[in-house]
Length: 505
Ligand code: FPP
Ligand code: K
Ligand code: ZN
Image 1 (cartoon, rainbow, N blue to C red):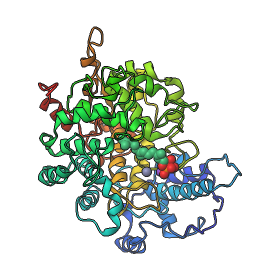
Image 2 (image 1 turned 180 degrees about the vertical axis):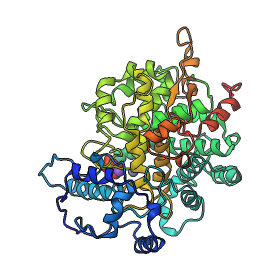
Image 3 (image 1 turned 45 degrees about the vertical axis):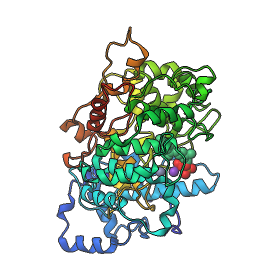
Image 4 (image 1 turned 30 degrees about the vertical axis):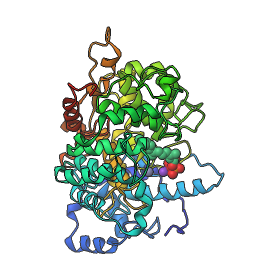
């Protein structure tokens, strides 16, 4: 079906709009025979697009279009008018994706007919739950490539399940058993059996253990020593001893440090300490500053291309150091960052791209979408003022990212996986809830108090008015995901309480 010629639309955006506004009919009006026919035709088409031609007005899908998207703004229903005539492999992929997204958004190729009061597919909670439970099951041989990602598989599945409101306590013992051989005596966790400790593996293991209430198995003193080994004299963090240095390291290590309430001073054997730095945060902000690029976005390391995944790592890491209104403007050019970050939300796709001239992808619903509450808080925007389009992200998630059989996916024509399922749901949470930073007295406090800044976030349940504005029903609501720790709020609170009296060991 990807060989289908890309034809120009035969209707203009305003035709399409009036067509859609005309129709207030709902899907329930389909006769059950019609519905069965459509279901059958699409049963195996999860990962393919329909091969129906664009202008086939008689086609049942074309007829469905106006029923499924009664209030779709026109800019999500047709290609934009600016076309670059330079053809590259990326521009071809972009064109194909855009067509597929429009066909799902307008309802033309939609195969999920269980729709909410706004005409969008419901969040298929039961199917996504079943999908995530399979992630915690056994793997066939081709999955050996994921051997170094054992902690990630657990984190994506457990966090995704909790975000869907599912109790995961039944996985506690299996989770502890999985991580026992991954924890190294010198501190931290490797990604697989016999692997050296790694910042990303240690981050995913710590979050997974927090999710099941299994944090007691972590040797906190050893973790502190290991974190001291990866703190660099540059101020940044390496991913492993002698490993690469990038901002994932800074975010992962500082998240572990904060959640486990480890001492701020560097252990005596730390190379950074030997080079004259005193604490885990010494020179960190100024190292992070060097990651902002000419575009205004953030690269993984100084001189790297700006990318959404690293933007989240930077902003969340700064929010671990202090309140956003202090640490973000202190180390970043906020105006240029705002320009780059807001440029990531695409039309007509409605979701986010990770970098300039690249394609929409549902994992950026979190990596980019998750940045906005942090940046908006830094800017002190008035209530109900946002830098991004929440309705658009809800539309992309519900209409384009859900696989009919369960799981969420990068984009149409891709398969769902645990990573995209978790981060789509986290992004959906960011779109559904307004997260507030409640600044406590910020004057006259020491560095230790600044280090608890990330625990000062709160949220409110979205109002009926907000649900209406952002196109979801109460049954499509996920749990609130903490904007810095990317864990459910209650897990963050339980972890804070657990170590409240144990700063140190
Ligand atoms: C490019 O992939 C993506 C990257 C260079 C960054 C990937 C990093 C993360 C997703 C997360 C890091 C964060 C932590 C906490 C470990 P691509 O070229 O396939 O995608 P693109 O076209 O969207 O850029
Ligand atoms: K991608
Ligand atoms: Zn992705």
